[in-house]
Image (cartoon, rainbow, N blue to C red; front, side, top):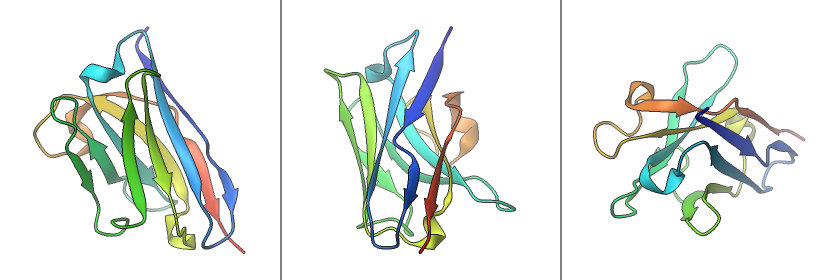
Length: 124
């Protein structure tokens, strides 16, 4: 079975940090583009970041640029999202997804495989 698993979610105070990790089961994540998406209650799912498999290009939503960093560790077969300077506006369920390089990195339909999601809550 092909599936993704996220880990690292939790609760943090404003200004704090969390690191999310995405791992694959049943296939090699190294050869896929991996995107991070988030969905807050009552809002549409939005693309947060993406890293390509071919050249390692990275992409970020304007709302997280400068605060979040996506990276890949092929030895471990994982992709991480380091989130710093967190704000309550970052509160959401975060999903990782795998697909092919190219297209619109921020569009959900570009990705074929999804994780179950992990909750991130930022509050004081």
